Length: 314
Image (cartoon, rainbow, N blue to C red):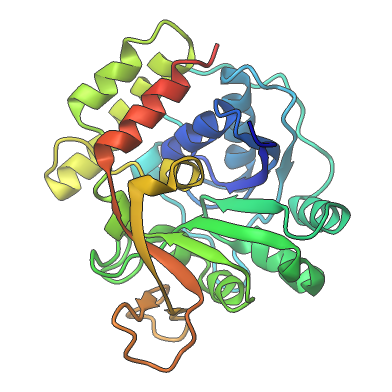
């Protein structure tokens, strides 16, 4: 087997973030160097605690969790308790974490780690607003050329938005950060709602987690039971979309996805379309391609990977 791919997960857990972290920690192909928490689905004090809860659930209290930005770069913080519950991880009853939060700020950790490791080796998996990544790029612009790639869940184009008619939550919360990251010249794979809305947590798929005889499987089922109710009511589907685990799944099995290298620009001026990802899918502008945008996912293969990996956790 090849050496594991070093990754840093930047996240705002969130039930779907939690499942993405579990998938990464269950996959020997990936080396999780650390987890950086950002304000998003819920405020920072909860996202950093939730990241530690998930590490302990996976039997990995050794993973270093760093707290980062408490709010977006320019705008006020918008959260999503109506989707994720007041803790951000409503559903299972998870104990308060015993593992400690690292003293170092997430932005300092990102800069220090990227500058210390060989260039082009670390992949950033971003599951929330891009505030921490943008602040790190402002603080030390040289990291842009050292990042191997960014794989981001965010945006939507053909599906529109999920928090406004035109904007997806992660980009909407901090559009200025997203614009800065998208324009930094870093290899970027974007997994928008167009793709994640095909990965539905049907009743049968959730039952596969509930049937596992470990801690993480039933906890995942409980998280999805809570998380999907909001989206089932909203979209009228059997199950809700499982957004963030697509980031980790693409690293593990890219053949499950289809996409295209295009230009993505982020709207930061208009209140009507604030945070919209304007995807030049048909290449009608002269704007240079800056992101591989994934449009389709093989949902059966995606859930097969998730259940196989999470079943191996303690």
